[in-house]
Every structure is written in C-alpha cells, then in structure tokens.
Image 1 (cartoon, rainbow, N blue to C red):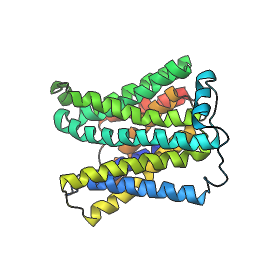
Image 2 (cartoon, rainbow, N blue to C red; image 1 turned 45 degrees about the vertical axis):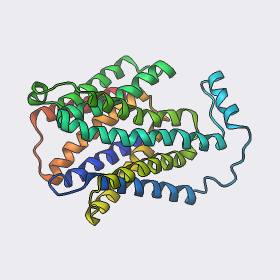
Image 3 (cartoon, rainbow, N blue to C red; image 1 turned 30 degrees about the vertical axis):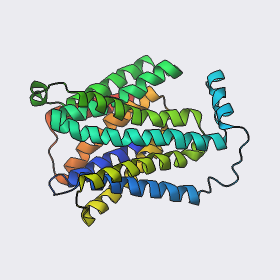
Length: 303
C-alpha cells in the first residue's frame, strides 16, 4: 500500500504543477515534450546506475519464452525476454500516453473540463475489467463496495450541473477513454509477465517514444519554446516517471481492480487538498463529500 500511496502522491504532484501554469502564457506542448524528455533521461540513468543490462544473456529466444505464457498464465519471462517485452510494451504504451494527452486537450475544447476529466479518470475501468476477465482478479464483496465508492467520488468531483446540461457526446470522449485506459493497462501488462527488476527499461521505452512523437508534434505546431515551459516540463517529468514506477510496484501486491480506482480517486483527493494548502482554493461541498467517500473506500478496500 506504501507504493500505491507514493504513486498517488506523484500523480497529484503533476496536476498541481500544471495548475501553476493555468493562468500563464504557457505552451503545453513544449511542457509535455520537456516532461517526456526528462522522464526518459532519468529512466536511462537509472538503467545505467543499476547496471540492469550487465550479465543479461539470451537463455532462450524471446518468441519461445513468450509462447510459454499461453501454456502457463503464471509464467514469468526471463531477464532477456523481460527487457525485450519492456521495450515492445513500453513503445506501444508511449503512443497511448501521447494520444491520451492529445485527446484530453481536444476533449476539453469539445466537451469542457468536467466531462473530459471524468472520462479520463474513468479510463481506469479498462485495466480493471481486463484484469477481472483475463486474470480472474476478483475483489472481495467489501472491496467491491470500496471500488464503487471511489468510482462515484471521481464522478462527483469532476462533474457539475452545468457540464451535464451542456453535455453532447463527441468521438473525442471515446478516444480519450480508450487511449487513457490502455496507457494505464500497459503498466499491468508489463508487471504481470516480466521481471520487475527491469521496469526501468519499460519506463524508458514509454517516455522515449512519447518524447519522439511529442517533440515532432510540437515542432509542427511551430509553438515558441520558452525556458519557463521547459523547466516546468522538467518539474512534471520526474513525478510522471515515478507515478508509473511506484504503480507497477504496487501491482505486485494489490489486485488491479483494487489498485486503479484508489490510484485515480486518491490522486483527485490529494489534488484538492494540495489546491487548498498551496493555492488557497476552497474545496467545494461536493468535493468534500467525494473526499470522505474516498477515505471510506480506502478503509473498506484494506479490510
């Protein structure tokens, strides 16, 4: 549970840093590119410092090793195969990471912040449902109550009467839900079959691919790159990297269907508390209710 709390803390930090740039003339695409850059550089340094690639030998072919997963669902890939698996799954996830960010920006324009925020957070339903169907990770009855409470709290915090009245479903919401959910699900796909010792390789692949796509997109938009935006991106990149880092570690001891709703709802709670303490923002009554619900959910899930 400690790792999950650290993941939540890192996730909330990202939003609080972005909140700092809301009322400034910032280029979000430059910030995003800088964020991915510092994340992949940091993960690369962790690979070198940890000497993860030293002494790794190819005991069997990657294809043969992966084929064993279809025979034994509990099979764990060898060190060599874990590295290759991390590069492949991480590369695919990097695309989802960037697409989810892009479609969040588009959805905010099409549907507003409230609906977009709700759908983005509810993307966790994808890893939850897949983990139940594929790996039979069923929560207990009490945990189900906690999960439902956390999901309801996400909706309460993000939605308002105004956003519901003006709601008009657009395809961007569907893409946001899918891409965001798949980006989160990739953490579980890696953790389930590969050795966690090589998670830094997986994280490097995610952020390197996301950086390449993001910087290409940023250059094509011809936006100005200010040093302030670059430094903000660097500040975001570290917690962005470690939110996934600690989330992967937490999945070793927690069911996916339990970890993800608490991860998402817990992040929102810390964002609200951080907004109060750092930016002196008042917590709306409905958000206070959602915070209480999340705390109750956390207690029930840990029983």
